[in-house]
Length: 417
Ligand SMILES: *Cc1c(COP(=O)(O)O)cnc(C)c1O
Image (cartoon, rainbow, N blue to C red; front, side):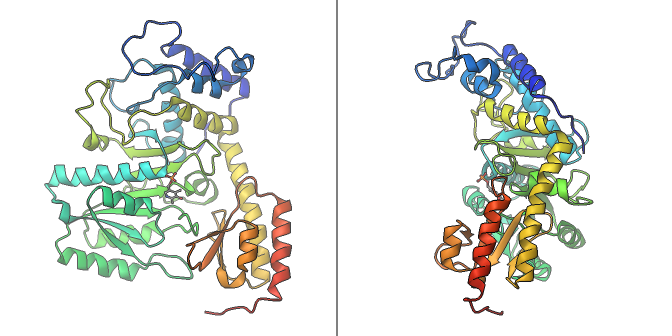
């Protein structure tokens, strides 16, 4: 995994060069599109600092990245300059982070992990329907009980049924026995096609599903499936920390990934990334998108080019080496907290390659959890509270939290399970 680090000057130069290749609403004859630059009464474009602000300049120029720019030869040419930046961003994610072969993938900047996950489910549903004449009731989506709610949201929208696999309460590992039983049951009940969601870090626990165990079973049972990896949380950390990452495009069992720029990458909201092997986007081509040159394959339609530009800027200012260092710093701080929790016998879950610690509610008071804004698994009757060691979680706040936690340990009678 390797992509070059650029200096701020190089980044600025590249973004302004690409912006100048876009059609300019201010200087060119644009009569046909229902888009323009941002309202000038509030976002005036002659603010002097804009010359040094490539992201804000892109935001104000307001390029539309509608459609997918890795696919086919026909694209909207109004904004071809910044489309080029999006292509480089998708290339870094697909080829460098997830080891795809050059040109063997498509991808785009979606509104978030939710959209990217639903895009995947939508593609596979249509794939089974078009290629195998599957009926809706013959298709099921398989996912663990720790899966993000965007998957059940997607199956509601797409009219598909779900098969929810329980996890072990301690390890948060998917119960393989139960997976096997439920698959056999589903086959008996007429399900023939399976869309499998595998988590490369869950939202609440940061647990990572054992993909090899899951695919070994699916392949052994000759299950007809397509597999999506939800890396919305883990996408920008797990591949940088773990050894021998099984979640890459070299793994033939995987067809697509989603990841979020607006979590660990510190990009603004609206920066999910969807990646999929070539030859799959066509199942969600909206032919009725007549006015979009190159057609549309996304769920969202119009989207801001500034989102793609800023994710690209973040990846480029760090380079692969810098990004790995930054993620290791988060892991180091997470390790520091876990060492104390272990020492004090505080029951918690933590995956070693992820910066989430989930503390059992019997080992922390509600008051302390609220004071430090820990997030519960549910607000009615919390069983767990999580700490996410984000870049703002520095040693000072960690120390204050830990000393408060230690203080109250003497008052809480520990619960055993
Ligand atoms: C956050 C998250 C999502 C959804 O992402 P949004 O960006 O909120 O749409 C999906 N899956 C996982 C595992 C997540 O952590």
